[in-house]
Image 1 (cartoon, rainbow, N blue to C red):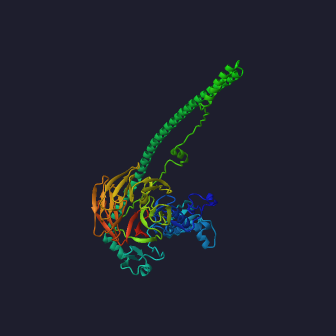
Image 2 (image 1 turned 90 degrees about the vertical axis):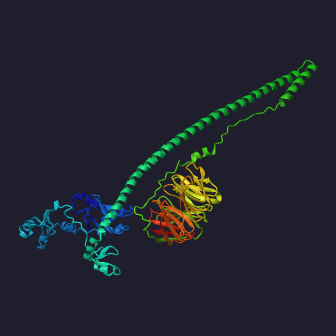
Image 3 (image 1 turned 135 degrees about the vertical axis):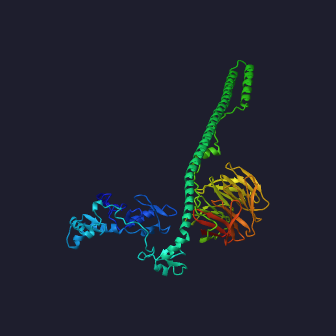
Length: 619
């Protein structure tokens, strides 16, 4: 750690570590000739490797040169011990801390150091330096003032150590061909005792020279380099692709938003016009009622006046006539059903309009990540179990590798979706489903088929929130490709496009056990009659595959190289096919596989063994 001492030292002080700015403590040097404290370099390596997968290298803190990690891939904390201690620099640090001439000290004298002899690895004062150079035998010694010593001169030439990697004090004497590892005699007598071909390092060197192994490895490395260059080019192209995709989506969204804004503006204007018309209609009705009420008032006044005149009539005849006329008019007025009208303005907002204030966002933006291994030869891979889980409650019906590498399993009986994270810990992420059957994912979200309810439920990929239901008759198996979702019922294949339109594209004569899609867009069907069928988007058959060694084919999976994996449930194996339907290999001894999902991001394979077990394999 840097302290206030850093203010007192210069950048060119070779006795100071450039990470902690303190005097070197066990300095170790890298192939680029820069030295650092043991603890400083260890902490730096670990911090640099923390976010990397796989952990293969780091860069020098000073010059940024690529430094390969020679230790165990997943243990960068152990790498620092494999770099040699800079004993020369360690000596200089020790001597400069004393600041005394080594020769004078041997004679019990004290003198301030001024120079350093590289040959003797000794600090000298000015006087001892003069006498040092006067002896003919010492004329060729390299002496330099301490102020002129730099890191390059203080670092030994970095070379391959002849010491045993496991026993630093032992010289390499043997070579184990079985493990392709040089070792010392102690390793040969212990760790490699039972190895068949352990020979002297000199004999092994001659054998390696004539074996052609160097040329073979160079050829293999160059071929791998070409794969890396291609992958690197694809990564750079991917940046342009996602930029183009985002520009396209932004443009489409802005167009849709403008259309929605224009539509909302039209709805607003129509609504305001409707309000004006409604107000006008209400005012006209009320005005008519006011006129009728005022006429009633006038009529009543007339009746009152007639009655008053009748009371004061000059003779009885006039009195009776006026009374009768006024009373008759008043009776008619009362029977005319005059009413007091009251109007109130009401507005019933539509459901869609009410939901707008509650919107938290217009859309959920996700970056779906997938990965493919640079070196993945399915013909050569061997599997080893590293984790096995038993589902105590319910039955597993299917599984799916999500973008990002997490694995999702569908528990049909319990109505849940179980997610296994990067540490293979289980989380229940979707609950309260009714007998879910299968699952897939695309940019719209996660799709779960619910046959008993005749619908597909859609959830967000990030937080697993329910988004919508898609009604469909008997949806069972499901897969997706470039925005389209393909769903199987008992004997037919349906397509759901990005407008949620459902259409039938193919019918079969046999029940469908599973479906998938290749990267070329071929729809794969696993049929109950034992066939694997590939059809195009028009429903035309591209190829079929059937084997006597494949019994009860169930789950289908397509990896990043468009290789197809067919789970043979009764034959206890998995058939690997090309995208043209040609057999590549049969992976045997996979017990009762319901599905076989290759998780390239994690270097693992997830297998549903029966309906109770999920087995995770490393490859």
